[in-house]
Image (cartoon, rainbow, N blue to C red; front, side, top):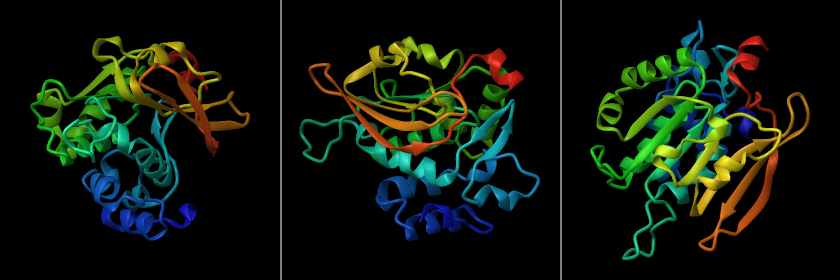
Length: 251
């Protein structure tokens, strides 16, 4: 059960707990990626061990890093769209090498997505593969880049495999669209049309939907090769709102 998936004093202990409780089902994909991304570098806490507890943490500017079990669940929902499609390989996924993380916060999931790409032999110097994090608070952008460097992801940043940019995530990021996967880390009152338009076909959008302080659902929206959309309510969730910079800082 996810609420018992606490680690102790190491990142591996946290991943062990998530795997033991079957929150992580694909150990060779999601588990392996999460072991390569040490949560302590992305979670601000006076107690370093708090980073390995299974609950959200404040990261400044009224933003949070989600609980590890939510990250694991979203990565499990994402994995087929991070794996690059290879027509010569029946095991290939639906991915096109492009992932967008909206409200990327401290950079944790950006790092996980990049590690999932590297696992499938995507070169960190490949110009076609890209994990983009978009965040509208400049201090979080700056801090997330520093977090990535501390977690030995500097080469991924320098090569361009990882890009962190400041902007309004509700508008997506047109420069590298379309994206086979778009993940949103905050709740929108409704699904932004810009994100749907920047979704590849096939592609998957994972987004919490619901108003602030009201019931919310984690929606999984799939676009098929014809551009048709299919919506699935995956589970009830509680996320901070996807909003403008002023409202977030004044919350």
